[in-house]
Length: 136
Length: 136
DNA sequence: CCTGCAACCCGTAGCCACTACGGGATCAAG
DNA sequence: CTTGATCCCGTAGTGGCTACGGGTTGCAGG
Image (cartoon, rainbow over all chains, first blue to last red; front, side, top):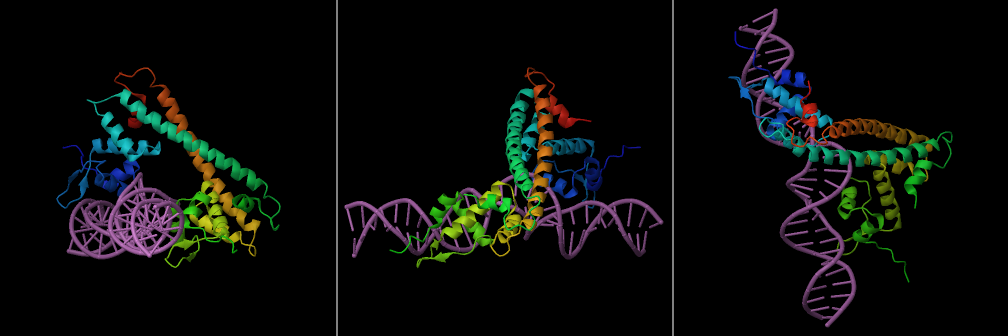
């Protein structure tokens, strides 16, 4: 009665909500360790892989880049565990997120305002959007 | 006293604030027409090119994709000029911008809140950021 | 006229983070 | 033992550029 260790890549993909091809990609770039294989060569994962992969997915969902996640993963290891070193990574990312946010908000305002001036004059020869793009 | 027609790619780049290599790229993908050349093969542009390139730059700055800009450019031509056809392109883009905006705002809130809980316990063994990534 | 050097030429490869494809091998259920 | 789902691997494509390298052209000063 050995534990049911041996998660196929497909089941790992479903469990961690990461695309199967993406898992292989993470292995290629060294973000996920190469797992054991069956005799026939199929990958076999365990719970530790699942935890690591879910960590990566949550990091990606928060917008961290692969290299930041690599750093965060090593800072999450029991020996190295350091909030002090995690903070600058997260803070720098937050800074970038805020910059993009400000940029997008600007675009949104311009687009919304310009489009609002389009309402109605469907068949008119003038177009606020085109005029903005041609603007001096 | 012929007009000073004949803008080198470098001067066009400076004038339109588009990278020189990007201009060549736009020509390769058919977004910019192939201009005349000097005897030696250097590209020579005119004001029409400058207007088109600036149109493209403004479109890119507003976040439109290359294919949308291609469509907008053709809808900006004197014969085809159609606000009616421009609107769905801009509206669809605005929709995408708003989706990204909402997504980024969500990230920002999570990151900011989590980081705020990091303040102070620099050398503590626990870390709100890591805990969130490991969550479950 | 000649030199020197900035500007230009072209094609290709690299960036990020995947995603898709194709053709073959393996696994597990019936 | 057959079938069909799953998995294998390597490579190429995505978007929108940017960088590189090695060669050619243009033009201003001497």
